[in-house]
Image 1 (cartoon, rainbow, N blue to C red):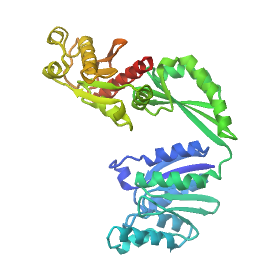
Image 2 (image 1 turned 60 degrees about the vertical axis):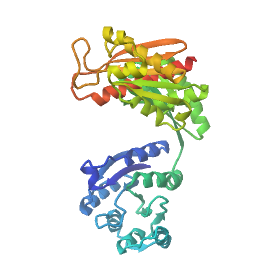
Image 3 (image 1 turned 90 degrees about the vertical axis):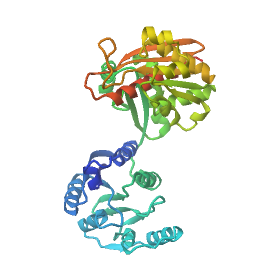
Length: 416
């Protein structure tokens, strides 16, 4: 089965919102073995939408549209789909009852335009929306399948997972399973160079690289008649990849992120981490604490931009700052050691550097960062040169610096 995605909404074309729906749907279609050939965005214009719908249906078996199902005059997705197939819009009883119940529960009067949300193309099937008012729609017509989903991601993702995935599974001819290898500390080009022969030659499973900010993700995907057999095909390939590129750069399988891998490792070993930050301004502690369950492993994070506060809160030796400066291996080491002691933590992580765009010198340019990790096994410091001289890379430098700190923390946790 071949598929396309059409995201409807002028706000997407104008850049007012980011289309996350296509990425979410794409991942699920790939997992089901449904080939996704294109996805695009179309504004709230019925003529252009109908033109794109005709193009998509001309070479795809399945077209999924998101957005344009609401009550306002510019929500015209189902009207356009109904017109394309020559279908009338008819009321769906269950959808109308759900609308009435929603407004009644909230003590609101339902305006007339809301009633159009309960209309669906004749012969279509309404899909309940537990997180909003507009139902989804599945229409099978002329040998094609068109699925209409609400635009708000909170509504769309829940509906797709609970209702659309089970519907589409009946079209699967095989089971597809993917495992993601998360790599930090090795660039995409180096990973490909070391694994190119494997990537090119393998057909089942396949190995595909994806670059992220400072990271590489390798997706190993197998097709089989059962999930168990697919995993049996995948696991030896993961072992081979690990042997080739080295275990030290792989921070997890299906780990999702460095911060999640660190929090899980700390929780498993009943360890705690504390952070001391300068140039990252709290980003390191934010990334740790965005993971559910982080309160079990994180008690303290300090942001000390000035030398005065480094001395006052972190007990950094004034002589260290005087001799080596705030951006130095020596200062980073003291920050990590002292925050660990202050918080009575097992691991102390610190970051100090120059994120730019100003503040750099020939000796310490923008992008020079020192990251330190302290534990009972000692203190390690890493010097990083993350700048590329573009003058617009502050956020990237900060993100990469925090990633290195997380990676060092993960390595330390594994040794405790």
